[in-house]
Image (tube, rainbow over all chains, first blue to last red; front, side, top):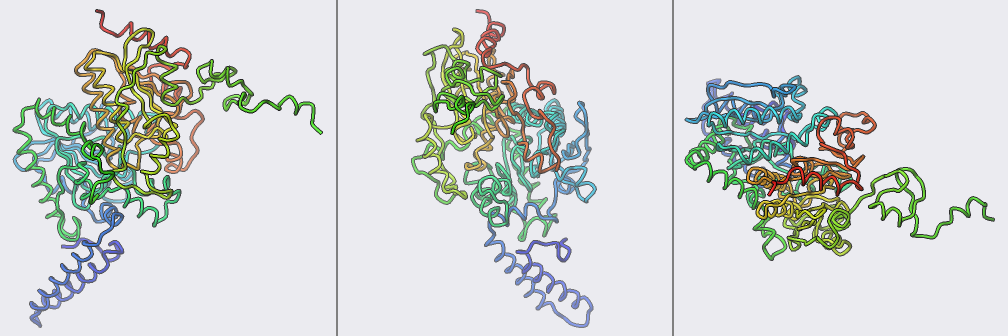
Length: 334
Length: 275
């Protein structure tokens, strides 16, 4: 169940880890066969659930950000592996490079043949370095657009899985037009003549996320976040201090959690995660995401293309309008 | 006792200014006559929204639209210095403008156009709801009225105080550019001025049919400090300046301010449909 190794969890997960450890010990003893501990195990299971629920009921915004970055959290590549069949990964931007920070693959999800585009953070240290921790270079965005055009040509829906701290801020990235690459993607995605479903599965880091983030349906996983800037970046600028306290405050102020995003109309749907977060039960998390994607595709593939495009335009054209044009200064509950 | 050369430098307050480009004392009146550029070295000083319109549009031709579009503090955002709502109110009171962008109908060398300018003096020209909405309205109006659209950018990027809503302005404005290009035959001319970075560069500003830049403007996605902190080394001289970006292939032309109207006019005659 829990893939967490001892010590790899977050500080606020400690009570959960302890409850799970008690449960594991009881199970081990029970399996020794000397004692029947079924009753104790059932009680410990309930206890672990209770403790987890308690912890998750009182999560702060920065806790959610930490969950989105959890070292054990499933990554885009994990979701693709769990959700998709007949996966054929494709490489290269036909311009200058193949950016491993963007994964592009033809595959099947449920009954749908699709093109999956996603950020790749990297599974181990070596891969993380190569992928710059999921921060794409311009060629990554161009690779994504090239594969989206391919999908469009063959009438395949596009699934974008977002998990990035942001686009890579480097000399080479600027030299090769990071801003232009992202802008072109945003512009061209608004005109793709196939359904596009976006799911923020971890970090939705600013323009780096939006560069593959325009779709007919935007989903967000329960413990993912989507923000205009990282809490650290925001704290450094507006609090002149990126310490833990200012960063936590910035996270709160940015209203970046799934629930806030839904209320603000930034996302259309929250994809629920297993109790304790996606890393506690990866299969359940992938199942939940896959079901939400398939539901969206079942609906979107029936919509005539012109209607789809008009809806997509209006969706992004009108975001925030209902909030800005109301007379109350701020939205209750936001 | 005053030194003889000291006396020479006792200039009447307010008439002179030291140029940030060449360190020379220059007459403010001469700066103004040179469209807010240094008459000695040509350094381009910043222009806020309305002054930018003044030096670009034909006299008395500007008719503002969407002036009632404003941003609100919908998140109830409070930073280290206080509430965003208060900051907005204060900035509006200080500025002639209601937010960091002004758009309207104008003529440039007699040609009817939709003209817009971002205002760096208003919260760093940051793009929140109001800026995004005005840019989208500018493009939609240009499309509906069959006019070219010219937008001058000057911005630090998205307005953090509006959270993900400001991020979505990148989507909104880029979608508007897409529609403008797809449905019309009129050009969108994007003019990048000092500085244009972040979410503004990575959306409508980068999407001009023609992209112009003022000389030596800082233009990029990530700010220089962010890059320095990431790669932990100093950036090369001239990095992310207009000249650098033209060399890399991202800008069509660098146009000094005193040639801007003439250049736009020429582009109109070359690109607008012949009636």
